[in-house]
Length: 139
View 1 (tube, rainbow, N blue to C red):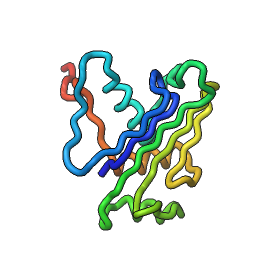
View 2 (view 1 turned 60 degrees about the vertical axis):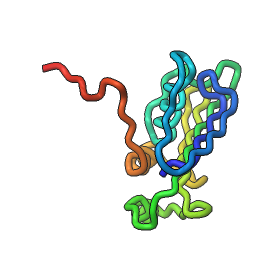
View 3 (view 1 turned 90 degrees about the vertical axis):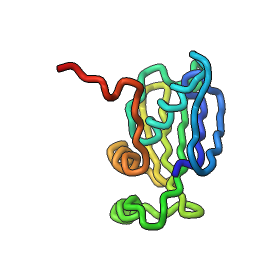
View 4 (view 1 turned 45 degrees about the horizontal axis):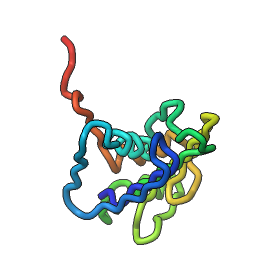
């Protein structure tokens, strides 16, 4: 379960810490309110690609971190152990991405440096993001 999202200097967001409770969380708001920015940030924390210019203007880096509390029997624990990554505080998994304005990117899981590839593998075990037109395809 996603428990928190922290964003700093990403697109238009200076600083945001968003705690999330148990159950369903719905992001609602008018066009341009920033819902897509939150989803992009979450995708970035989970190993997704970052568009150039996504670091907020005037900042030297953008930081996105997502905290998860998977159940004790979740397969992510075995994957973390395989890669010598220790459990975080309170059995949390914290995915973090730091993107420099120069385009250089660093990834962390529970404050341990990892490759973007490993971040993506672990991220895919914890979250699945679907867009508005995911079910649409051309024949």
